[in-house]
Amino acid sequence: MVTLKADRSRNILFAKFEGYIKDGEAEKAAQKLHVELQQLRPGFDIINDLTGYKFADVAAAQRLIGIMAHLKSRRVGRVVRVVNEDAVGVRQFKIAAERSNAYKAYYAKTVKDAEIMLGKADA
Image (cartoon, rainbow, N blue to C red; front, side, top):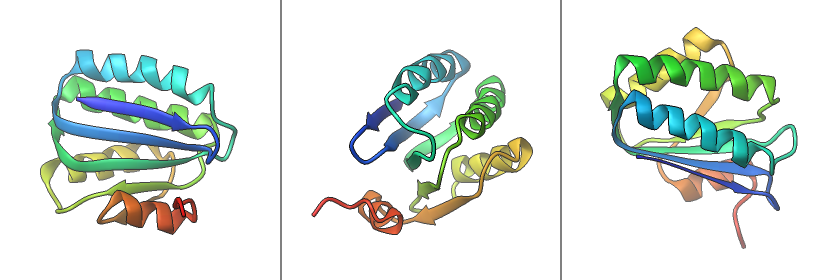
């Protein structure tokens, strides 16, 4: 499952990937992403929670590469991936980011740590 939510006031996109992602779900996530990005300004940041993510099938992984390139074209700022281990899914995201050459990602252990890294933690 993929959950996406734009926080307009902090200009940040929260993305959460859980379980195994198939191409149909990745396609729906790409469509939802376009809607959520309309709420954000260039330079928006992303916190991508991968703590429950297993991996994506081959077609979905290819779609992720396209999504990363789209984020670059929308002038994404910083991307922080929340991970709790170096699982297959985390390695898959690293490979996709290298192939898309879209942006550099940073890593945190919790969403709160990611918000602190970005200087966007709620008081």
